[in-house]
Every structure is written in C-alpha cells, then in structure tokens.
Length: 609
Ligand code: AGP
Image (cartoon, rainbow, N blue to C red):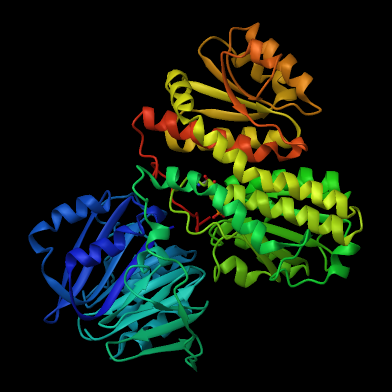
C-alpha cells in the first residue's frame, strides 16, 4: 500500500508537509514525491528511495511555502521504484497532478486507448492513466473531470488531485483504499491514515467508499459517485501523537512489543464483566452462536497465525468444526458457503486486499462476517456484520507484534464467550480461564526482565544462515509466526514447521550451521518435543529451547534457553512464546543492523493483490 498526504489552506512550509508525509512512511517506502501549486505553476519533486532522501533534495526549498500540495510515499505495484514511476503523476498537458493508493485493474486497456488518442506515457504505472483521464475530461472543474474519469476505472483507488488552474481546490476520491480529511484551523489535510494527522488536527472526516470530496479553503463538500451531496460526518480524532511516537525507544517495533501488557489489560477490561464475556459490536444474537457447528477463519500473514491459534482453541473448548485458510487461497476456492455459515476475518489494518476480497466473496454467498480488526472505520469493519475491535492502538512497525497478540486475545475471549453461550463452561471454569488470561500481562512483564539474556542469545544465534522453528499443537502456529518475524526483519531464511513433520523431510536440513528454535512448554505434547530435540542434537543442530522455568529434560539438551513462566492452563503459553520470539527476532535483526521498522520490499498493509 502507499501513503497519501495533502494540504489546502494558509501557506505552510514544505518541511511541515514532508514531516506529515513521513508519518505515513510505514505504508510504503520505495519512492516518494511532492507537488505544490504556486502562482499558476506546479512545483514537482519526486525520487526513488525514502523520504529522508527527498527531504535532502528539497533542502534549498524547505522553507518555501505552499497553500495547495499533494505528497506520496510508494509501495511499488506496477513499475519499478524509480523516479519516473514515483508519484505525483501529471496529466499530459501538465495541468493536473495526482497521487494514488490502490490498483487499477483495467489500466492496460485504458492505457492503450489513451495512447491511440495520442497520449504520451512517461511511466510504467497504472496510476498515470488516471491523471491522463482527468486531463482528458477536464472542462473547467476538477471534480467534473474526476467524476467522468472514475467511471472508466476498475479496481481500488484513493486519490488526491490538484490543478494549476484551480489552486484553491483539493479533490479527493475514496474507493477501496482509505482516505481521511483532517480539519485544521488554518487549513485542511488529506491522509491515508490517522498517524499523519494526530499532531495537526482534532477533527477528521473518514471518507466512505465511492465518495468524492471537494476541499477548498472555505469549505468541504462530499458527494457520492452519483454526484449527490452527502452529509459530512465530522469525528474527533481518537489517537494521540504519543500513540504514534516511539516513546524514546529505538524502533516502533520495540515500543509495540513493550505495549502488549497494557493491551491485554485494555482488552480484558473492555470485554469481560463479572466473568462474562461481552462484545459490544459483535452484532449477532447469542442464539445464533448457540447452535453454530462450523466456523470458517481467513486472514493473511501474522493475522493468519492468530487465526490458527483460534482454530485450536475453538476446536478444543467449543467442539466446533473449524476451517482455516489464508485469504489469498480462500477467496478463490469453491467453498460451499451459505447463510448458515460464519466467516471470521482477521486483519490489523482492515485494508488487506485478499482478506477484503475473501469477505466480499463470502458475503455474496450469504455468509455472516465477523471481523477481528484493529482499525475502526476500516474497509473490513465496514464490510462486516459484526466486529471485535482489538484496541491495540496504532501499530506502525511493519512487523506485527501487539496486534498479533491482541488478535489472539480476541480469540481466547471469543472462545470463552462461545463456551458460555453454549453452556459448555460453568462459573468456576470461566473464572479459571480468566485467571490465566489475567496472568498474561504480568508474565509478559517478567519476560521483559530477561532482556539482557535475550540479547546475548540473539547475538549468538545471529550467525546462523537459516532457521527452523518447531512447535506442536497450539504452539505450531507460534513456530510459523516466530519464523515470519525473524525472516521479515532480518532477511534470514526461516521456516515454521510442525515438529512432528520434521522427520518427513526438514530433518535433512539439520547440521551445526542451523539454528533450530524448539517451543516446548510443559503440555501434553512436551515429551514428543523432547524427542524432536534429541533428534536434532543427534545431528549437531543448535537448539534454542523456549521452555518453562524448572524444566529438567529439554533444558539438558538445548544449547540456549529462554525460560517462560508456567500457566495453570498451558494453553495460554502462546502469549509468552509470541513475545519471546518477537524479542528474539528484534535483537537478531538489531544485531545485524537491519532496517527493523521498514524492512525492504514490505509495507504495513498489503492493499493490493
Ligand atoms: C506481519 O508481521 C506482516 N507484516 C504481515 O504478514 C501482515 O500480518 C499481513 O500482511 C496481514 O496484514 P493485516 O493484519 O493488516 O491484514
């Protein structure tokens, strides 16, 4: 996905506009650009690379002021991350400049039509067709031209559009990609996400899908695609600048790892009252859940790993049949979904294209949608019949941490909710379950105390060229998540595997140059894990054991050990394993001097397929 920032109002310095854009850099950082209108002319600068490099290039003009500007930080979809493909893009006559987040599915067809009409394309992007279409349809006002242009487009697009000929106008469009207008006292801002606005405004307008806003210095009008004016819903901004800062820590990822204990407490206080679980926005009757027999779960990446933990919980505690699949697969499968089926979709951003597409497909077949999501007002929440807000606060680090354990928390509480609704647990069993849930934040705080040891272990294991992460049962998804965390921020190849599968191939990988992380808390599969560790040691593999304090068997075999506290119910161990593996990945990547918050090729949310 990409980050869009824009402004219209009293002149502001270029440096302030660039700073606003930089708060969206987690959305994509392959290239970036700026276009401002001044005395009937565009001032346009764009380049590959990060915003800091653009700022350096703009050094001579950082104090220049503009009253109308659009800015963009890109995650490349069509066209390499180079200067010509960087946004903003101009229309042929150079009167229109646009920035775009999303994907135009029919851009090749539009491109060939425009070329036949004599248009000269300067880039390989899908976006450029939009700027030429708006230019083509321009007959005096940007919004009229935009109305005509969007009729031709298929796909998703959040747009910011300015014209040299109408310097007092910023036209924005939302279809399938988020856009927010910030209402300041001296001007109005445009942003893809709230972190860019927290220190600038107190009031915002979340554009809805298929809306066009005409923003000028004196007013803001919103229209639907049928050109009917619609009410402008002004809302208070719900996060603070502090929420989106690093609080003095080296990386957003570390800050967000450390925030997890307070997130668990927030979730518990929000959804548990007198040992009963209640989700205010689930928007489905208890009677609906009482009789449910099967649940589908879909998500991508880390969210998928949270769904995997949820699968184990719901099968074990609610006797449910659970079908789980990644969204990019689920959306294309011919699954026999109907009105009696429930699909749970999990997404931190609520903007992941494959998950949104899977949900839309399921809705078409009549299924009910329950989303577990971290961003209110996101496309996924708008598409869902009900939702559980994970209240983790903004997650800026591209590698998901607190959102993951918050999604897990939602599943633990949803499992208890269903058990209560189905009459599968009594008061005492609910109390026992919640007793362990309440312990999570304290046990995670305990783990933070071992940070020095974690750093030492990470330093020692940083030298391995690739890793296997092994787990069983409810900890198997944690093996996958641990591997994903490590590979996406350190670029070390790592694979999460069901430990029982190791003998069916992966054991061929084991030698003294291989790091093997074995997740072996004292649960019903512990002895099996001990056997796996013995098999690894017999082949000189180097084992990092994630073990309970007081362990007497696996600890004698492991080369290094991260100890975790023991729960009464060891099904809560995944929370502690998750945090250990987040910290392990973080310190390995830090040791290797990697770009932890903005790893190469990645973006915070994949809003394109
Ligand atoms: C997580 O560390 C990754 N950045 C990625 O796998 C992410 O979880 C995935 O893209 C899903 O994002 P979402 O939760 O916003 O849908």
